Image (cartoon, rainbow, N blue to C red; front, side, top):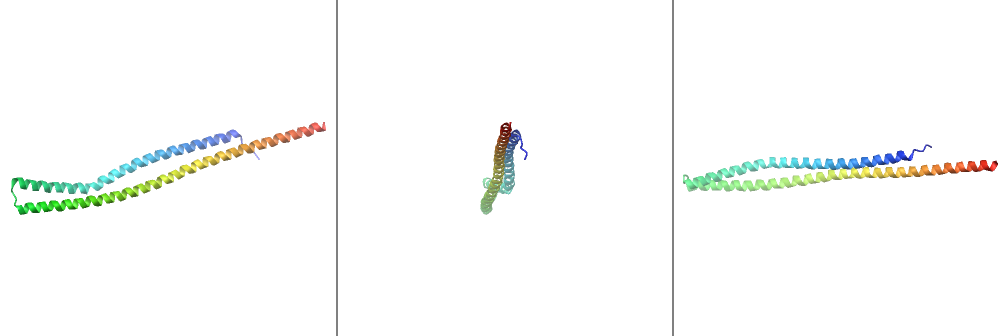
Length: 171
């Protein structure tokens, strides 16, 4: 049975600890990048979702401007003013409904994104824990090998002493 030098195992454990530390750093960098990307995607999605609402708001502002213009200039009759006011009220109700629907969809999407992010972080955390556990196991193996080497060395010393003792006995 060959005995591997203690220094080799110490270096091996040290390298494994460095790998574990590097893995942790890589995990944190990946986590930060993932958060930045998720934030950028969320902002872009929100901007896209707001386009129809912005258009609806512009349409309402246009109708309100027409209504205000007709009232100040007195160019239209009260029935037309009433129709424009009703149209504006309808648009405002539609806008409120769209906002409420959009808010609910955004909230549901946010919940989904949070759950996905939590799953990714849990998986990454488990990977880091696995690396740490493997590093600890490697340390235990190294300690056991050192103990075995020490025991083997002690046995060799004992055999040498016995041989020297028996040689001295016969002389």
